[in-house]
Picture 1 (cartoon, one colour):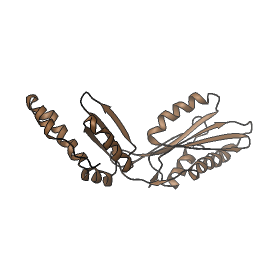
Picture 2: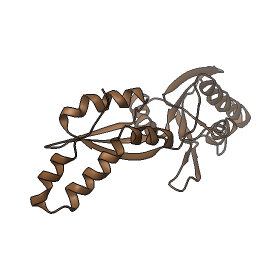
Picture 3: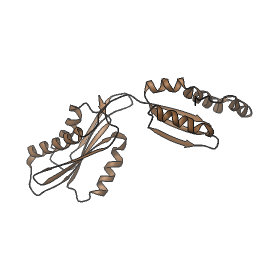
Picture 4: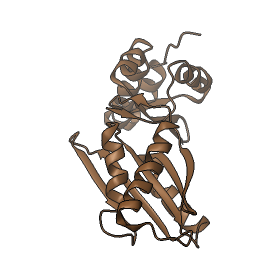
Length: 217
């Protein structure tokens, strides 16, 4: 299976109808859909299709014709995703009617072509399952830790700034998890979270002081 890491956009014209297609990571799908509805209020249709994995690693598919004849827009778009074995991404196509009716067959070909065009423009990467990890550190270690994130190619990062530490919620592959363990980052996280939540309050400070993270510089 394959996926993408960025948003791609292409446009084709069929009998004066414009088809603007976007290939987008599934995490950006809802946001982009709402944005397109605001940016293209005069568009005839905004068609979409997506394929994603649920928590059980099962493929979930959905599509919308958005007022086009049933099966003439969303399903041809979905077929293009299936054909490339794309996962965790979506295609949205904005159509501006050009005054000439295409017929059901013509619409199927047009939406298929538009979806195919945006896929061809994209850089496809092999799908790798990501796991969520949480790492909490002292503020004075933030620069070193973020350096390692950059070196390991970790881009899915949500920071949480607390009173005495900064926590990172990251999504990483199994290989990257192993590298983080080699840097003692995940070990530190597990011990710290356990210490600060289960140790009696009067003992927490001494425990915290004794668990300083050693990060190669």
